[in-house]
Image (cartoon, rainbow, N blue to C red; front, side, top):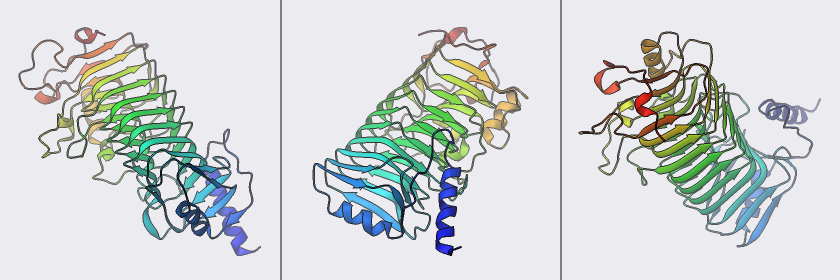
Length: 397
């Protein structure tokens, strides 16, 4: 058999192995060895208000693709599993595709095996991503790119009907952005399935996150251009069986996430979590915590490390019958406090200075469905001296 044909066949098999079998089929046979030249030429020739069509085929790409400062451009493939941009042989560039332009639409293609982030969009006003997939075909490795879909410092972001797999940080990540919608997406086998970080006004709904380390994260971190993100709604998501071993590189923030985490709210403000199914996690269903829990220092005087104004209601929670994770410090803490017992909702109980009252941070938890809801305020600021399992102080909406 011709060795080049064999190598292409193996690549297609690897791509298939990273797909969910009941959704994904590869129907093309055309392989473009000079994929970079073909596609980058189209990007260089792009005009405002134009569409770049990428026909069906497997495009081998050896360096980053880029589109800069050309507004109102649509990049459109023939289908998520028909137009595949393969970066398996990438030798140059920090991303698979990098875009710095306004009013951008990406549709109907896959980016596979980028040496860094798969698709990064930075400083864009108007981002519309539909039916785009990112993946790494060699499985869960710390050497995989950090992010699959990665809009950062953008305004008006919509991600719809996309799929992200095997990212060593977050499959779908939106950071330091305003007016964000992530819906109808499928995130699996990442460290974090979907992550909203330092964003203002975001909605995440009707997604499936499964077989990640952590299903859905809302983080706010210090020392970034935009801090103190707020205003996030998480609803009608299926967050299921996120118990994958954490394969992030140590030192990355998500490296602290214990396998078996459904939702984590870290230094999050004004977040509503409702009508979700949070099923089969071995450590906890929902974690609510201050940035102080990371024990990391920061220099940014603007930064507010606390979590407050949280509403968690009308969710279905069902625990996995398993021992909580002991590979990460957070998981070890859960197992120390509740030996062998995964928890549904954990709150670190860390308060602002001079905070008074039974619920000064306005953490409201009500009408969640569970066979026997396990809740605890773990009093982390006082070395867990007064762990309180009584939820009555938090039954408000």
